[in-house]
Amino acid sequence: MQIRKVVWSIFVCCSIALFACTTGPEPQQPAVEEPAPAPQPAPEDPVQITQEEYDRTFAEVEEVINEMNAIIKAKNLPKWEEHLTPRFRSHIMSKENLAEINDSPLMKRNNIKIVTLKDYFEIVVVPSRANVRLDDLVFTDSHRVQAYMKMRKDESVLIYQLEKINDIWKISVW
Image 1: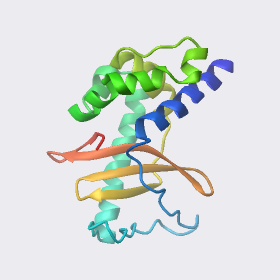
Image 2: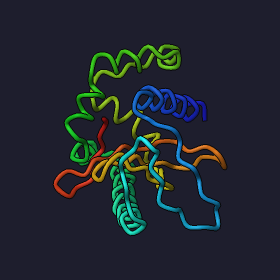
Image 3: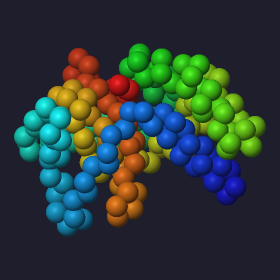
Image 4: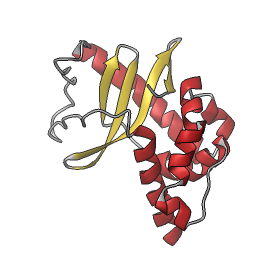
């Protein structure tokens, strides 16, 4: 049980470190009994999507996330890597990002160090992303979305940033 707490804490710290600079305001959450409405763009956000586009993209992304859950549960690193954009890989493995993750008190206290993409996958991704679900999408533009999972009534967590490249949704950063 202690290991689960440590792993969950690592996930939270790494997620915060990974997405601290890339997340926007949390999306508004719809009432539980109503279907999720299409997010309305902020005044500075030129993205305009229809309910049909939102629903279609939601279904596509939900399918990708379900596939990712299976890949992660199977601890299939090569298959997971196929779902990463080069930008995501570069960001995760950058000296700055690794230093930020490894310098966290939790990582130091547990004498854990991430050096390789395999380390990141095994230490952060496998314990934290194997059972995520899609509850909401926020569009950055027509081919980039942020996928959120509702944790509590008023709290959502960014689980993935996805970019559609050649009609395939991939994990990305921007």
